[in-house]
Image (cartoon, rainbow, N blue to C red):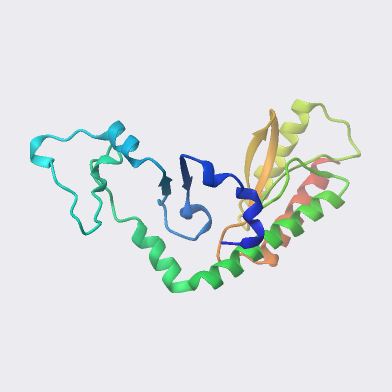
Length: 205
């Protein structure tokens, strides 16, 4: 949707299949995945189990029977939800929101990079920032630093103003902020940052 981000998807045209999840960053209610496959006949061969009473001929009108493309023996009309989002907001409005989320993530990443008590642990091509607290005034072992960040994350989330998640990168406990809500603004990301700084300073005393 964003031409300036096309470089991140170089080579997708050579893939046999691609899955994207609009319920993650196109504001579509859970669940909805968009599955693109170059060889749908292989998918049908994997899932097809058709007794006589279910045998149908796909008509010449271009209608495709999706019952053989998954184990459910049918498909809910999930795509309607995405169609409604696109119809309501329009492509340009969605592009504006995505660009703003990326801008907010870059802004947040810059704060992490500039602060002596934090470090960023992954690139930020889109709207997710992976980082951790690393207070420079105290020496902590790797396990202690993991536990320190767990405490910081729990304290931030217990406030109720924002919610951050976590993951592990190369075995290291990492805090994640992922900006994906239509109404998220700089005030929200700023509040998250203030809470992180506040609790990191408190626990490092």
